[in-house]
Structures are given as structure tokens and as C-alpha cells.
Image (cartoon, rainbow over all chains, first blue to last red; front, side, top):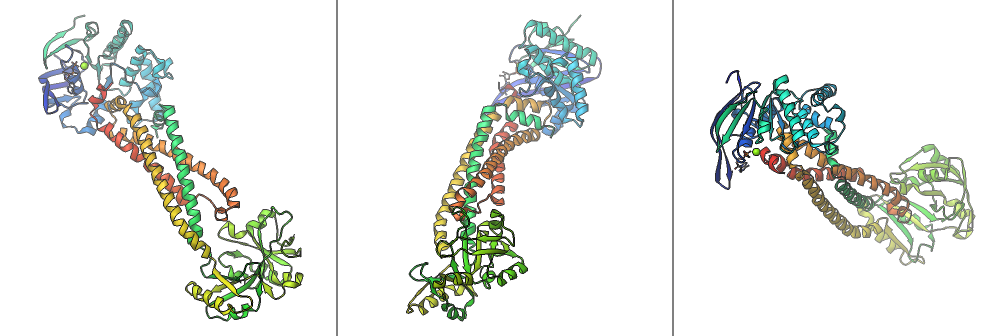
Length: 232
Length: 385
Ligand SMILES: Nc1ncnc2c1ncn2[C@@H]1O[C@H](COP(=O)(O)OP(=O)(O)O)[C@@H](O)[C@H]1O
Ligand SMILES: [Mg+2]
């Protein structure tokens, strides 16, 4: 692996606890992802893909090991610091888009910017820019229910990139889409990686989707099974 | 402020539920505000009688039997007495029987002294003019305004009890602390005596003012005993004798109103809490998404709380507006029948109470579900579909 690592996991362990019963999911996992990398995290259902993604994105905490992302040791940040860190460094893309139904596309994309010291005009400019990137400027006054699934996911992607984070995490982003829309979303992610240099961590079990990534990592029973460079 | 659109939109996510809750809140706050205002208004009368040391002396048989004017000489000499005044209910009609208001023939000199709690603001020179003019009268400001009377205008009263129609020149007006006390006209008792020779030397009642409220029971007892063997015995009572009885009854009304208020507020809390709990539970995932995007727990809590407080404030303000509209109706409708409510209004304290209560309600009902929502781990919120 070359280049400076933007994500560095060392001996990451994660267990869930149900009624004092320990459910180990990740067991001493090491992973480095370089700045500008595009990694697809694959593996069978229940193998811990989402768990790992959540740890790296800073919405969950490991039970062991050390986690360094974008130059911060996440283990050392408290909840509010972690929230502030997410606001700046990570963009989230979910399987079911998770747009706010009472806000239109423009307002949905604007949400993360409300956390930043920007004027209304500055926010507007950034929202328009993000919507242009996903090619949905003409839909900005539409509410989520007035958009197709593919369009909703593109709005969600615009929301994920509007505050210009270095890392995008996407958990099964095409899981709810038909082939054509899935292809469109994957092409969009690829462009964000190539043109804007976003580091992308994609969780998927769809080989076609995973093919867009540069590196495929396979998770099996809580440890990394193998890493495959995608040749194109 | 930049979250206002978000708060408002979220509030009306379920339009029906929100409107129903607001309507329920508004009606309840209206009820509470009106009941509390009635209580405050009645309290105002019962707890603050204009003068605790004023005694009315009349004929023992009835108000329509007149008593000799000379009784006043003896009463005035009693050590407890500050002032006395002969006064006669005239019961005159101005133009139309429907224009009902109180009008009395009274000895003019002591009026201001006897009624100093009612005649609060007046012009010295106007009242001097009144003393000099036997055909003059003084009227309360709001009564004068009602008929458009100005100083110098002539008001003709048509006698109903006495066969005379005095033509009175308005010499002055006064202001009182409350409207009900401005609905009165006084003219010279001498004018009545001249016009109706058969009453010469007699009058309906005396107002006696004791120097000290504590002396009143003794004074009443002494006056009535002194005249008990006379041809025309007297009956004396305090101005608020009636109000004392009233006060006893009030104790019960207050208890009822307070328990209704408590019950309504409790019901409101349950309804609002339920609405907010539902509104927040529906958004478990959304809360998690907000926090994943970098909103802190406190920021999300703030947004949810703003929503709850706004919801209950809308209801509260709506209810106060309803109560305010209703107050006008009560004052003009019921107030003309029940004099206690002639001054009915929503007191500032009641208004503030309702505002605070609805705000507190919003706060209380939202805090628990909102707190639980933001304490929930983000990953659980994202998994809850
Ligand atoms: N909050 C949780 N509590 C308990 N068990 C969990 C929780 N989240 C995930 N798991 C368990 O951890 C394992 C890995 O889950 P996950 O990371 O979601 O897998 P994947 O995304 O690869 O399908 C599964 O067995 C799942 O049941
Ligand atoms: Mg998963």
C-alpha cells in the first residue's frame, strides 16, 4: 500500500453485549486505507462489515485496539468532540437514503452546513454546487417523496459531500436500487473518488458494485480474509 | 434561528395530530384562563371591599321606610365616627328605562370623604362648582362617557319613586379604580327635599364612616341600640356584610376552580407528552442521522425541545386569545347582570400563568422522550427501521 494512510485500524476489536452476553464481532483487525483510496468492504451477511464501517466513521466505539482517522485518534475523543469531528471529516451515505421527509432536496443538502459558521448566501452557494455535482439542480425544491429512489440517493450523496469531508462511508448504497440506478450511483461515487479525491469506504455484497472500487477487502468471522486490488 | 424552518416543518409533519393537540391545548388553556380570571375578579371584590369601615344605617323595617334626618346629629357625635352623610336612592330614568344606572340624592359636602375609595381622581374646582350649584350633579367618568356627557351639559332625570324630574347640570366627573364604581350619579339632597315636600326631614339611609374598621361592630351595635325604642328603629350593617357572606361561598368556588385547573393541566400534560413521544419515536432514525452528520446530542435535544415548546405555546397563545375574546363577552353579557363581573378581565398574572404553564407543559412533556431519543446510541437508531 502506498501513500499516507488516512484510516488506520490497529488490533480493532468489537463485541456487542446482550444481557451480559458477549457477542464478539471484530477480533483484532488491522487495516490501513490511504488518502484517496476507494475500498469495497465485502463479506457475508453478519460478518461485521457495518460494524467496522461504523467504527471508522466514528458513530460507534471499539472495545479494543486503536483507531486513527484523518489524523485523530478516535479513542481519545469524547462524544461531543467525536460529533464535531464527524461534521468535518465524514460524509454518510445510507442504504435507505435517510433524507428528512419534511425538508426539500435543497434543505436536506443544507443540513450539515448548519453546523458550520457560514452565511445563508455561502450555504446556498455550496448547496447548489453539491446539487450540480449530482446533477439534480432542477429538483432542489422537490421533497423526498417526489423523487425516485435513485434521485433520493443522489440527494443523499450531495448531502454527504456538501461540507467537503475527506472520507465518504457508504453502507450498501445501492441495496435498494434497481440495476440502472445502482449503476448511476456507483458511477457518481467513482467520480467523487477520482475527480474530488474523496476517500471512500463502501460496504456491499454486490460484486458489480464492488467492482467500481480500487481495492476489495473481504471480512470473514471478524477478521480480514483477503485484500484484492481491482484491475481495470 | 436557522433551525426554525426545520422545527416548524417537523411540527406539522403530522398535521392532523398537531392541529388536534393545539386545539385541545387552546380549549383547555381558554378554560383555565377564564376560570382563573373569574376567580381573580371575584377575589378582587371579596378581599378588597372598597371600605371596611363604612356603615349603612337605614330603617329597621325596610329601605323604603325613611328615617329622620336628625338621627344624624347623634350619630355624628359618637367618638368612633369620622363622617356621616344622608343619601337617598332616587332611581331616576335617563331618557329610556334601559339606560339603567345608579343615581342618588346625597348631602354634597361629605361625598368625597365618605366615598374616598371610589372617588379617586377628580378636579377640585369642578367639585366646588357642584357644591355651589343646587341643580348640579357629579357623575363617574365611564358613565359620563357612556352617554357623552360633558361638564356643563344638562341631564334630566325622570323620577320613578318621587314625583319630580330634576334638570341637573353636570358639574364634574371622577375616576375610580374600577369601572363598576364609575357608574353613579349624585345630586343635591336639598333639591329632592324641595321638590318632594312630603319627605322633608327624612331620608332613606346614612352612610357612616368609622375612624377605624375595628370600631365598626361596636358602632353598629350602639347605633341600633340607641334608636331601638324610637318610633323609627334603625338597622345598621357594614358595606361588606354581604361580601363577607360572599367570601364564605367563595372559599368553595376557589377550591373547585383550583382543582379543575389542576385536572386540566394534568390532562394536558398527558396529551402533550403523548403527542411528543409519538412525534419523537417516529423519528428515531432521523435523530440518529442528524447525530451521524455531526449534530451533538444537545443540539438535537434543543431542536426537539423547541418543537415541543412551540407546540404548547401555540396552544397556550391560542387559548389566551380565546379567553381574551371571551372576556369581552363576559364583561358585557354577564357583567351587566352580575355586577361583580362588570370589571371582568384577564389579569396579567393569569395571562402569565397560562403562558408559563403551557411553556412548562411543553418542556416537561418533551424533555423525557427527547432525552431518551438523544441518549440512544446512534447505531441503534440507524438500525431501527
Ligand atoms: N447493536 C447490536 N447488538 C448486538 N448485536 C449486534 C449489534 N449490531 C450488530 N450485531 C451483530 O454483530 C454481527 C455483525 O453485524 P453487522 O456488522 O451488521 O454485519 P454486516 O454488516 O456484515 O451484515 C451480527 O451477528 C449482528 O447480529
Ligand atoms: Mg450491514
